[in-house]
Length: 417
Image (tube, rainbow, N blue to C red; front, side, top):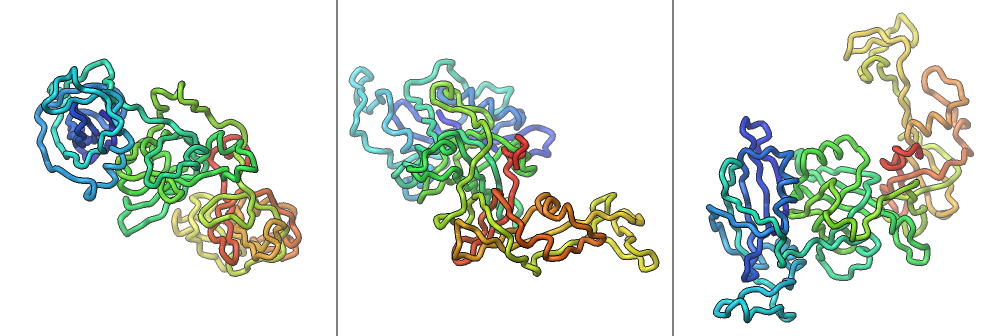
């Protein structure tokens, strides 16, 4: 049995109610996806409950058969089944005794699967679990990111442990939950990869809306907190890693991590340098000299030093004094916020126009020695300044290169920008 998803559809209910999806296989090798409605089990306990069930023989009481589906109707489910096939132990064959059963290398892959459902209450004993793992259970094979890069098969399931160093969300519709989350991850194998392999130092993992996230991960992603994650049964597709329905993300290391070579990322994270192979929606470092300022994207504005609101109204009778419409206060010392986008001359892309939108911390360090009362500065204050190496998100790479300075999550925790 394999845990494939959990969610909490009734977080506001007085009686905890969650759902979990289990991929189960019987003694005849037939797979089923079991959708369990759990009543009385808090959402915070679900992940631990699933870990306890995984790999163990179980007896499920009160199951309903919802439908029988084939490969063409559920390719995502069958890509997961294929990752567990052929079985490690002999399976029963109708009309034969157990003594005649044997492991066959040429067993055809399953062509159908059942969708089952049941209701499980904590007070009822309708899931009976054995304490010894079954021989049919195949634990996830933990790959390094370097190994995943070398995978040639299309739509192949893969599992790995990686550190998230940057994240970016994109709304795919007007519904707030329909967000596509881009996680930029790395591990020691990518960080130490030799230059001859040309492997990127960071990979992108796309988390699609069907992938269910627990509350802890939702809070981490919402607050941009550094973390390392176990990605189980993600899909390697066209050179990208995608988290879809039945992909499980967990902060806990896999049970067999001690024997699978998992190691933590240490030291400062390295990014690939900007060059002719840099693609859009990736991360890189850049070095260059400021040769101009994009004035349409460079400006400053005052915000309230008490509440941070930008809803300030000038008071004509008192110079440099504002009234904050948010907290109803007179502000004589507003905080000046700045946005600055510069043109760079980069040795790595000498024939290309490169723009870089800077973070406020970098802007302050550049303009620190210049005097200004209202946030206005002369162009000479930034012209000719040498910048870098700076961590960047690549917004555009074809024709003109458009970069945005970013702060890496792991690097921010170690004091490195």
